[in-house]
Image 1 (cartoon, rainbow, N blue to C red):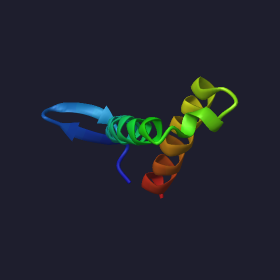
Image 2: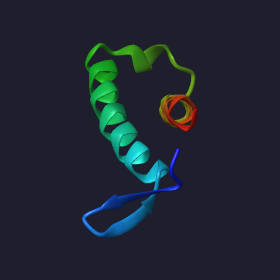
Image 3: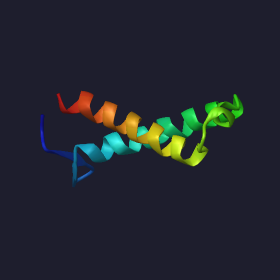
Length: 66
């Protein structure tokens, strides 16, 4: 696994594209969960959103780093 990725001549860490993909996936997932009104079952919706993003980013980055 390379430590850096070349993006149009800019060397970025591998986790930067993973972060961008996870942010896009999180926004889509957040909109779906908000539309389904899942957040009303959470004790603290903001904390649930942060935990959801951390779990998504951690899971994807662990898969990529293997």
